[in-house]
Length: 222
Image 1 (cartoon, one colour):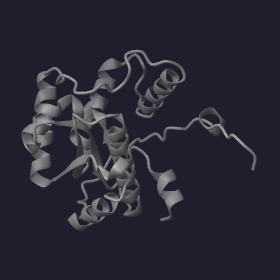
Image 2 (cartoon, helix red, strand yellow):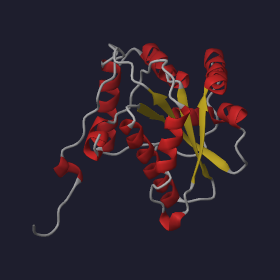
Image 3 (cartoon, one colour):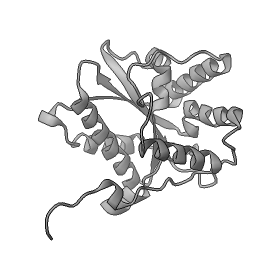
């Protein structure tokens, strides 16, 4: 698979088979992803990979919280601005309509939307999950570095025939994740990432992208 195919075939998959991901594949992907760029080579990501019993335990604990109606943990960072301005507001709205529309869920059916969202904490059935932490003392450029690292991981997963889904949703249960992972003090859970083989029968809408002229400005000649 060449780089262009990896980029264009990567998408947020929300339905995985139970087929296990070999440990050596995950090690190969993460060893290569370590070459992702970061300013002054800080490499600010702290990554945990869960499979098997530990992942099952995390899913169980998250499911118990969800069933009990426990409130989300206090946020460690702001996921979205309180009031998104245009065009970001419209893009987010369009994503929601396409995501839930593919599941046959109307905008007004909040209960069904909540049930669909709860699949986040089951990792959409994925047999492997990655959790990315960052030091709370680092700044926005280092958060950007972590994003480049995660993108590198996702593209390498595609090269291995795997799919993924990054999930800020796990940050809402960061205390539960910490119960299982015991990360050092001072780290913030940025996101989780479900990893596995796609369930081709699961509804999974491919979100479109803005036209090039809407996001890119060319300055100069040829």
